[in-house]
Image (cartoon, rainbow, N blue to C red; front, side):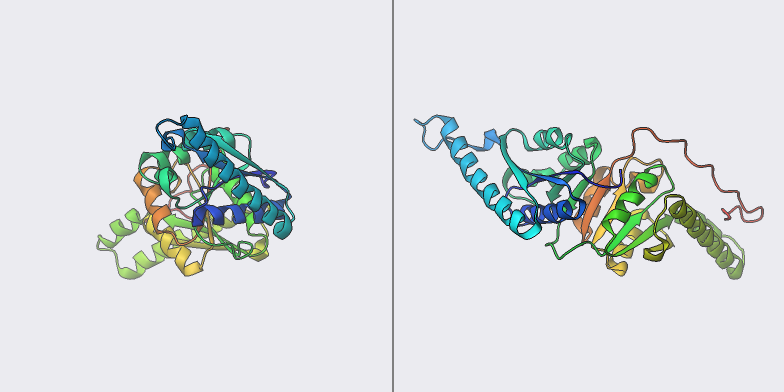
Length: 313
């Protein structure tokens, strides 16, 4: 998939939730996509107005208020982004409802933080569950809309997931610059520095490894038809989480596009506690793309340098 035709955005009317709505509207305008606004009412969080009222009265009141708020959003979106959005208010468990509704969309857009029960979406196991089980890309919005994405960072790990991530990221970066990034496992580098090899030999080995990784990134981008005039490449040594965060700040990224469920460390970094750390500490929006259901075998490993046993291009 290289474009979105249907976008679902969920809001709880918090600041971040409303930022998500406006970002989704802008993306719908750029991609010519259908847009649906969703607000989920948690029935367990709607006590009756009075003990002698039916519990449904309070839910109906909240639903009417939410529907009116969504209607105002739809009017704003039509005037500002020329997008005719549909709106729905539904009652259910927020996470399950989002997963079910997003099955009919190409993209799910949510705010980074919410209030009330929806806040728990990004705390503990619920965040992991959303990221693991969603079969649609999930865009997590944490910044106010300031136009199209201009600096998009794509960390890749040379698995088949990158083939799905890169074309999608290129479409999102069509008004700006795309940078493809790879974090080289620092374990081998640390081993070399722990030997008696002269520093120039270690430095040459490091440079050779970096050059091989960049060459591989370029070949992958060329095979996928990425625009070479707007695509940059960068590699560094270190842990994929911290190097990604540091490089995103240095690059000035306003969006990180990353795959999940890969076969290497970088492919797995969006799962478990690390996913919460990335979402908590990144300063920009983040698009999480699921691994394709059917993927070809992983590419064969690069040949090893006979003396230093390092990958060579």
